[in-house]
Length: 502
Ligand SMILES: [Zn+2]
Image 1 (cartoon, rainbow, N blue to C red):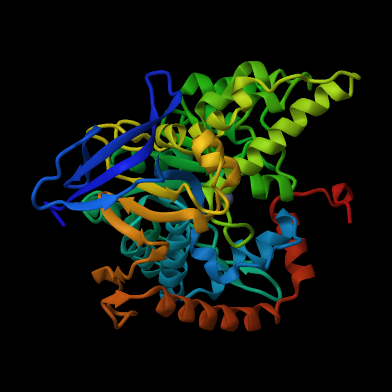
Image 2: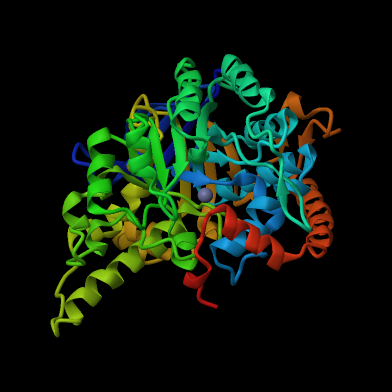
């Protein structure tokens, strides 16, 4: 692939100007060695270039997902009507059921779902650190998919058993940070397409231990992103600030409960936020923080603090909702507009127009340029520009969903009208991963050779493995005393029982 050249002819590309306004522009795009080498009309195809006719196509920068738990594919559909504490039992803590092989297929399938939906970069909050092999196979799944990613290695509390639910006592067994150090020495993986980050949620270990771990992370220059689950029950911004670790590397997922003071801390530190509208709206995690105007006059003045400018979007649990960043942008935008409108309607007033910060362009930017900033790759991805990585999504402007909107307002067509079915081609690093609407086979990363016999997998092969391992996990899940485990989670998180509404 090294010298592969491709020319996308005659498409309408969604190009960001200097002020990050999106300007639909008729242009050819020459891709060379994984990079956008040239933009402009009438580019002559080099003799060895593959030419793709993009007449009646919209070409978008690949979408960026800044919070995802890819391993959970086998748990899809289990949380349809659940809240957060139940999800912890039937979702998060089910990592116990996963073999390293299950993790490989779960991660791979999740990344392929993302790719099929036009996502080209994922920040993985990888809380599947049950053993060094689980981690290595998760990375192998990510690498094999062809997606660009930041694999955020996550030290975590490991469930030992259910009935009763207990945890392994050695949260920080020697292998935990040793494996991190080993991976940091190998990173990045696959020519830099998958890099190593760090994820952390174990604040209860206390300042001394936490700072020791962060020092170990800091020693590894390769780690540019440290992601943490945001304030649902813990005041994470204030903790990270008090521990002296709140800086531009920190990416806080969720954040619906942050106060004005916390929002100011996040901004002052140059830290970043990932809103995950579907899970946040469903699971009582507060209002997605990614649109300032969703907080008009609620007393917190969050709208004036302006966290939107350091916000991005994540899918969080594709076990709960679709793995599409476009659909998260749409849900987040319409929810924010609802809060904005309600504010005025409650006063007997009628809002005449929506503010610019609640435009489809603002939503598009959260999913592209701002996602790139959140994972600190804004000089490489998130926009269509010369010398940027060729991470591109080609939409059919004549599809039943896009027709009309695509010709009149291409950004609206993408954010409000499109579905993954309208996506014809997905390119990451100049390599086509979805073509004519179909995912292409993936080559299996060498790290996975002990659990995967084939060197190349079709989607159908992967789907069969997911169904098989999902059924085994469901049988095990049915043996679990969910009420007992629910009680254990409440104790662990120090949730006051009298506050629970049934
Ligand atoms: Zn999460």
